Length: 85
Image 1 (cartoon, helix red, strand yellow):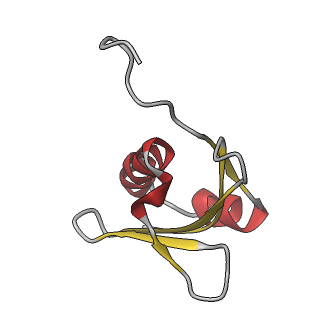
Image 2 (cartoon, rainbow, N blue to C red):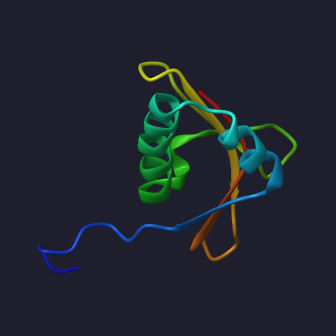
């Protein structure tokens, strides 16, 4: 990878329950959540594995944000199932 290029991000997709939750957030909460989603897209391994599932649980204690997601087999798409801010 050349120095001018950063890490490749995965594409982030939100499923219906996450979209419904997102619609209820304020602009400030959405901004905080957006920062967390960008962090996950750059490094999908940030979250902790949920035992017995393919899900990962990411919590950013500083911004008060939580996202539950899973990563596709090719690691190019991160699917967010739940958000909280």
